[in-house]
Image (tube, rainbow, N blue to C red; front, top):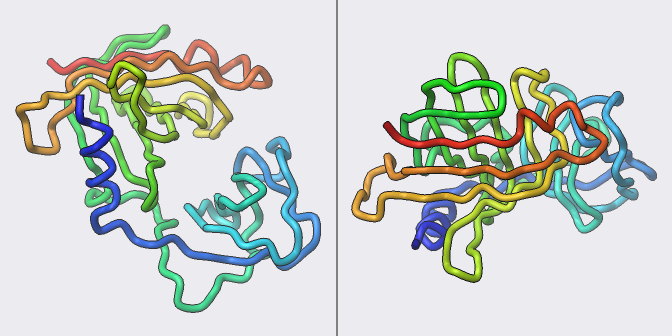
Length: 213
């Protein structure tokens, strides 16, 4: 499988630089979601330099030397001249997509699988969309020792649970049609993912499988 190599090329080509900001207060709380009700995972210090990945109202998802997570936008000073990729993904951000069948522990239905670039490095979003729900896995594309392509998952969300991103671990195996050069390359996806132990209610939502018709 050569998906990881193809993904690296597709993700880097034309990807915009993210906004760069600096923390303006001491002890800026970093949370797992866009709101003060979400658990705190870390603290940034005044002057820390961070990359702004995406925005949700008054909250932004950032990555820095101390880790990644959601912080309040008003406590960041965005550097002049930096471009932005914090907008929601548009159609031009989709690298691969296919229609097929989605299976979870809760249901089976027809839907669409999308692999979407989030920024210029290897982190991507894998989304399984149907009329019933949207599942999203966020992580980095890599390869196993056997050469198969996988998504190493860091975060998971389900629209059935309020679209809240939660920390998760596990992998999504990615199988593609190697003779197809179009975006419609996804053949099969199998996600074996476990949300963080603090979010046990997400367990039956996170495992899924996608196959083309």
